[in-house]
Length: 149
Image 1 (cartoon, rainbow, N blue to C red):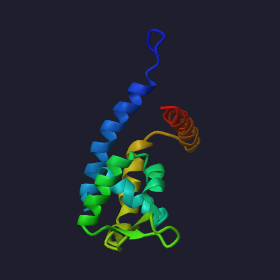
Image 2 (cartoon, rainbow, N blue to C red):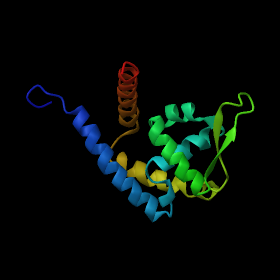
Image 3 (cartoon, rainbow, N blue to C red):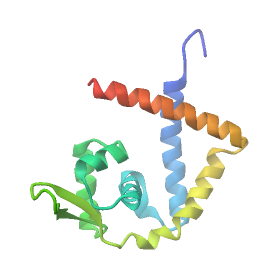
Image 4 (cartoon, rainbow, N blue to C red):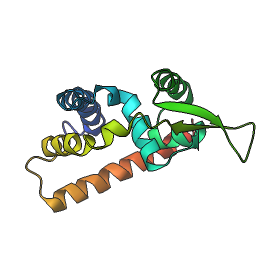
C-alpha cells in the first residue's frame, strides 16, 4: 500500500498483460500456438465439458458473448469446434469439439507445468493455496459487481 492507496488492481492488470506474453512464449516453445489467448480458454473449457451452449461457455471463459462468438467463428473455420443443434431445445445451439484439438492434450501438461513454475517460483505450497484463495475471493467480488452492470 502506497500513501494509503492499494495497488491490487494495478498489479493484477500488469500480471495479466505480462503473463499473457509469457504464456504465448511457453505455448510457442511447445508447438501450441493455436491455444494462445481466448482460443485456448474456449478449448480448455470444452475439455472440461463438451457440447455446451454459448451462454455456459460465456460463464466458463469469462468472455462476453460478442467476443466469444467471434472466437467460436474462427475456431469453427479452423476445424476445432462446430455448432450443433441441441437435442433438448431445437432453438438452442451447442458448441462441441471436433477432435482436431486432441493433438494438444499430450503437450499441454508440460506447458502448464512450465507456466506454473514461473508463476509460483519461490512460493511454498501453503502460500500458493492462500494466494489462490485470495484470487478466488477477488474473482467472486468482480463477478458480483458485473451482475449489477
